Image 1: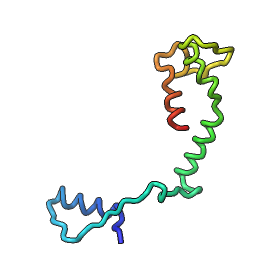
Image 2 (image 1 turned 135 degrees about the horizontal axis):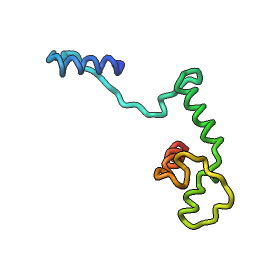
Image 3 (image 1 turned 30 degrees about the vertical axis):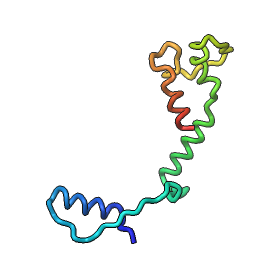
Image 4 (image 1 turned 90 degrees about the vertical axis):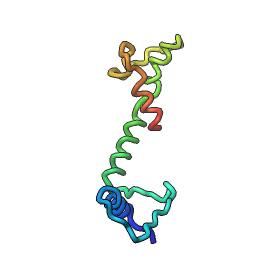
Length: 103
């Protein structure tokens, strides 16, 4: 049986910072990320669902405007979102990087 991770952290903290010797064997077993699930009613799951919903509401064509202009490609009348994606902003493309990573 594996020891809960918080117990392992407490034991290691005691050993390192307090100089105590640990006589019990601590077993930590690796697990697959697919074994971890968030229940739908948790704060994290609700936040993830809200973020996903927001990302899919964004129009990729609008965010590509600055990239198209920089590459001298046609960018026909598609308005940009503003702020970081404003063509005059030195951070243009910053949000698009986050957007692409999130997708």
